[in-house]
Length: 295
Image (cartoon, rainbow, N blue to C red; front, top):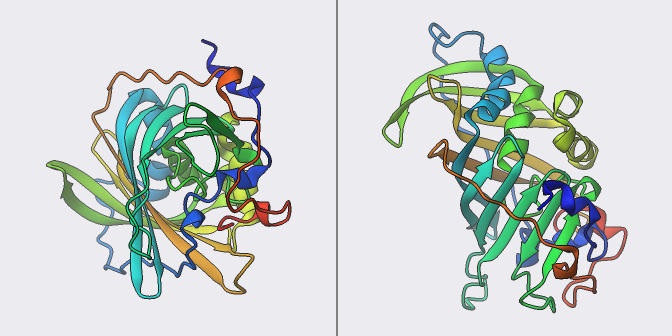
């Protein structure tokens, strides 16, 4: 099957259909922050900014990996985490994640896992609910999302997260540590979405450009952990955006773990006949609200 087939698939409405896996919980989120440990010198780490600029290219050279994601939010003093697990092909920029929503604040049973397929410019979701038939996929054009699907899908696309590091403005080498039995180098810094979009691959350029315009700030603080081959093992990023229902900017912390490099990845994108073309029955946003993550 043509990996670019998603460009010919149908679309279930506007960008708001992505929904709000993060926002479908009805949460007003508050900020997440990073601890401020004192940085060690960068001996043996090379120039931190240059090292981080190259991280996405090194992932492409690695080919593929397994991935675990988490997205943390807080509301009313309660922290909520959306978790995902799957595989990613960095050369084809194709991935598959199983995303698990947590128990909702009312204490109802956990939601069914949502299958997400990640592709350049598109997000496909199965088990979306809200009136979508169980055997159908919902397709979202991620270039129309004001967050570029860095937040909306409940999991940050691993390669988009890595390409965001192309926009690193400042970074320091914190030191060496161990992660999953592997020695890694810890870097802390801030990336600029505008610069990241200008330097990103064609598959992520438009989505990151949309995020640069849609977030409350184009600056993205991060902590990155790279192994001695330069491959990202862990990446934690903090995103801020203006929710249409709140005046203040809100924040979400996204963490991506990469391991099992070289894992075979077979992602088959849905055929047009398998993509839902109807309306989402639950919490259908207006055209204006669809532009904001959190609706």
